Amino acid sequence: MKNLLSINDLSKADALEILDTAVELSRLSENTVRKFPTLRGRTVVNLFFEDSTRTRISFEAAAKRLSADVINFSAKGSSLSKGESLKDTALTLQAMGADAVIIRHSASGAAHQLARQEWMKGSVINAGDGTHEHPTQALLDAFTIRRRLRADSGDLTGLSVGIVGDVLHSRVARSNVLLLQKLGAEVILVAPPTLLPVGVDSWGAQVRYSLDDVLPLVDAVMMLRVQRERMEDLFFPTEREYSRNFGLNLERMNRLKNTAIVMHPGPMNRGLEISADSADSHQSVIVEQVANGVSVRMSVLYLLLGGATARDLNLSSAGGM
Amino acid sequence: MSVILNAGEISRALRRISHEILEKNHGSSEVLLLGIPTRGALLSQRIKVLIEEIEKSPVLAGTLDITMYRDDLRMRPPRTLMPTEIPGGGIDEKHVVLVDDVFYSGRTIRAALDAINEVGRPRSVQLAVLIDRGHRELPIRADFVGKNIPTAKDESVRVHLTEIDGVDEVLIEGRTSS
Image (cartoon, rainbow over all chains, first blue to last red; front, side, top):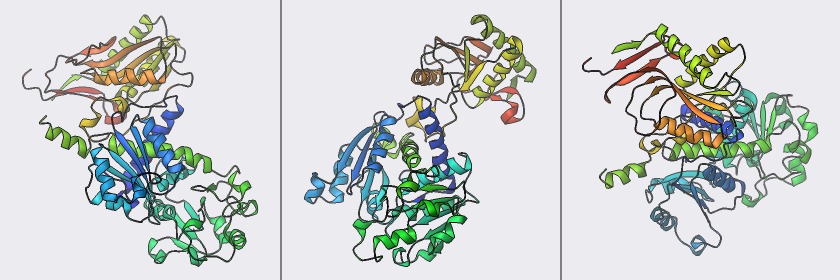
């Protein structure tokens, strides 16, 4: 595995290997080992064209716990805001010796573009491209579901997961549908028709329009953030109406199974898609998702950079060793 | 391919190692066995059972995966991590006995020492191995050895244990003259 661009690039075995490795890493992190020497000398670049706090910090923490050097490259106040092309940025990163570039971009396909053009030799990790995919978020969600409901082992066969809300703008939803189905879970999408993308019927997930009907059926419910910054049109009449029909609150939570978990990829709009008391309830695993994100990203970085990489092989052949 | 230790010989070697561990550490109260996965962890479990039989008291034991500390990571594809389980009280002030199946270059043990350093500060670290096949590349030695087997570098030593391989035996492969 050289890049992580889309969940589609992963076989089921690859996905399980990432989760299993993350399990060992999270156990070690609890066991007082906070830092590993494994990626010493590797350089990881966080290339963020879009604002992000938790994903960037999570990748940064993961890389640092593996002793990699981290360079943060954000669009604001850099050459990127002066109109530099993705190609020139990539050539710069190549010249600086980046072993991996973690890219977030508002354009769907930006990570693929960076990886396919071979402007640079390092690995590319997609940290969210437009409304397309966010594979490490899906992996950490699957990890969280598996930890809570499957005791960290096997796949997710027999589980049902509801994904609720702004599916149209959500790369998290797309990656999750692909991964959860790959791991054997059943996915039910719940959204107003205006917030479902064209062609959603080809995703293989059930589509429902009533949250109340779906809640008793699922083992995990994932509330998506209403992405107001991506909404150029009016997708629902008022926030209050959206919240009444598609928001999770304590009264609705009574319809869930006792064992069901409540998830949110963050950042939350408390009071819109999820009420404060349900976000803080004992069934909520939202804070665990953040902690698990670091373990899962450590796992991805380890599996991409921990062994021999294409760059190592090129360097050693050039060196005549 | 020839068998150099059979099940009975493996069992007697482990019994002797168990006694030697007790003798060196004046009993088992401060001993903590750490097996290196996969087969070192199984051997460590067996030594734990043997020591508990002899001493009639429980012995601390765990496993230590050294993958993240290897010095040859960049020469091969990434390896799958194995479980590390450190007993609840940690390893501080304990006599840690590392257990592995085959002792060869010494690089695995060097990595294990680095890993131990991250987990805590034991009073001492000792090394028990079932087979010492020589060809050390680092100044590291074993405290407890099941059997010393002179080998050539092009030979390979395989330890089979019932838990994984269905049989207890140690084989040597690729020997051209013997």
